[in-house]
Length: 392
Ligand code: HEM
Image (cartoon, rainbow, N blue to C red; front, top):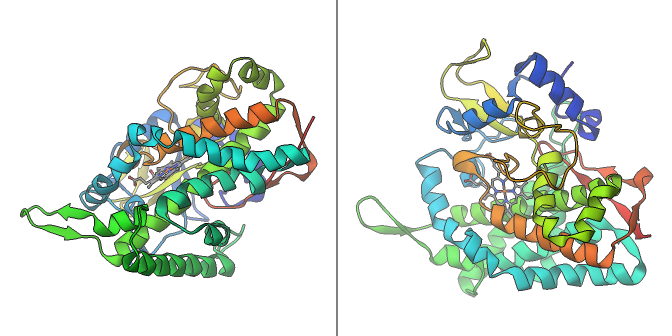
């Protein structure tokens, strides 16, 4: 059995491969592409807790990224640089700060869903699950409404991957340049006309240095933040919400439980995150030699922490391939773990809950046109590009 994270067949259903890996090659080596992979829950957790050994500084996907040429982003930084950047923004994303956004998130969800209700259905992704998180995060960042869809399409396209080398298509590279260019022009605009948005706040934020002096973020750092949060805040939530719509369609008894008792919705969001993780792995590069399950991994090796596989580890979860909204609390690794734990987890949980609550209110019975459901083919992001549905 082979783990080929670029294969379209793998994207359809990675779980049989993951099971094989956990049982037969818990520290797996792919010679062809050149990486190792950890698939058991405990191993993924342990590696995630050693960010200096399992470094993020060369990118978190399989493809090596020249992070020195890229915009600076904390997701691709190790301590201490990472911690300085994270401290600066974390206050804006605490569960308490995020709870204040509930009325705005609900109004945004309703705005997407009302036209769908009137016409009796549509594309769950293009008309709802991509638009809700886009409008929420772009509003927070201060991106004008007229620019949002274009920017979203560039961010989407920049994540597209091919099945064969060079893996990154030309249109993805062009889209990366276009979205970076957009963020740079937005920054120039915010410097000239500051507003209440996050980009303006980042421009004004002061960093305390060790010697007691203060400094400000550079333009490249502000743009790096904006593009990281803009992309991380839309891509994964788009997938999470659409994954839940498809999963509930395929598990009608679980949907009935949620309809009968909406207080189960937060549990349903967690279970979707576990069952079909929108982010399937986190890539790292070893800063020293490491041996796991008798496999020697030399310094400089690329290692995938397969959170998608860890989430289905029978050593951690009973009957892991059952979708169960009553599964209860656990340390889920769907948002990553340790130092790089998702900054936007509280916002994602809020948008996931409200998105599902408002969808359930308007579409208690719905059908998905399964024959025309289409997946994205990205690096570590798994989910749907299109989910046609109609009220039943
Ligand atoms: C369902 C939705 C989401 C999922 C599944 C998700 C998943 C993840 C995962 C797995 C990581 C860890 C990456 C690593 O260890 O290399 C991460 C980090 C991150 N996420 Fe999310 N995310 C979601 C939503 C969001 C949102 C809404 C935001 C917006 C603020 C966001 C911002 C970030 C940032 C900035 C990081 C980097 C944190 C750091 O390096 O310290 N995410 N996310």
